[in-house]
Structures are given as structure tokens and as C-alpha cells.
Image (cartoon, rainbow, N blue to C red; front, top):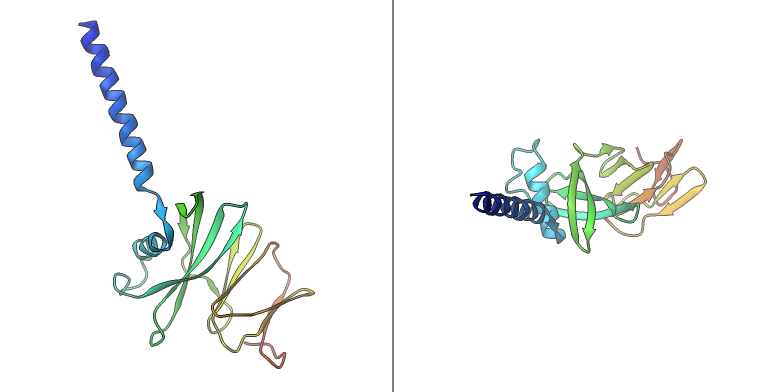
Amino acid sequence: MKKRILICVSVLLAVICLASVFAVQSSKIVGDDGLIAKAHKEITNLAEVETIEMTIAGKSTIDNNRHLFWIITGNKYQMHRYYPLEVIEIESEKYRFVKLYNGGHERGQDIFFEYFGSGYSFVINNPKCKSIVIGETIVPVTELPFVYYYPFTPNEYYFLDAEGNELN
């Protein structure tokens, strides 16, 4: 009888261990397609979330494995929305979901930021924006979309056009 109970307990523990390993494995987000699929699942404030096109603009990284991916919704004929998706990289190109921010903070047409770690992550998708000025630092916008991480909370920052005029 004791042997039978011991076998049942051992089998039950094995099943629990396998179930927990499977649950951890199935919760992994794999690659860019997995990140997009997770964004489709997590975004709740878009009526067309199931069918809208989504792309990854880029990412900011802190602590070597904590990433903020900028997800852009819409195509060239639709209005864009910007959603920061925070994940932790557990293996190369394999992530664990942390949270989806409810859209970035808007700083102009197709210019957004989000607090991340101790700084700001910026995404710029406005062709008029040619640089970001953060304190004494000037960061040229070299491509669109452009993602940049500033590791501190800036006192002030500006977005400039080609002539050096501030974009509103």
C-alpha cells in the first residue's frame, strides 16, 4: 500500500513538473512574429486590432536583456498608433512579456516617448524631424522610424526640422 501511494505521489509530482515546464515554454514569445502576435493579443483599445497591420519600429534596451519594442499599427494609408511593448529576453530572440503600455506619450505628429527604466525611449516617424536635442546632446534622426533611448530623465528636449526650427 505504501509503495502504491509513493508511486502515485511520484507520478503526480512528475505531471506537475511537466505541466509547469510546458506552461513556461508556451508563454515564451519567439522572434518578431511572436512580438507582433503578442501585441495583437494585448492591445485592447483598437476596434480593428485583429486585422490591422503592425510593424516593429525598433527597440530600446536596458540591463542587457530588458527591451522596449515600439509597435506601430496601420499602413501608409492609415493613421498610425504607437505601442511600447516591454519584454525580458530570456534567450536569444526569446522573450517573456512584461507589459504593453497604453500607447506612448505624443510629442507631435508621429513623435512619441515612453518612460523606460530611468530614462526615456523615443520613437520618431515624422519625416520633418531631423534631430532630437536633449540638454547639450544633439541626436541626428538618421532613418524612419527612428528609436532612441536616453538613459536619464531629461529636463528638456526638443525635436527640430532641417532648418533647426522646433517641431510642435
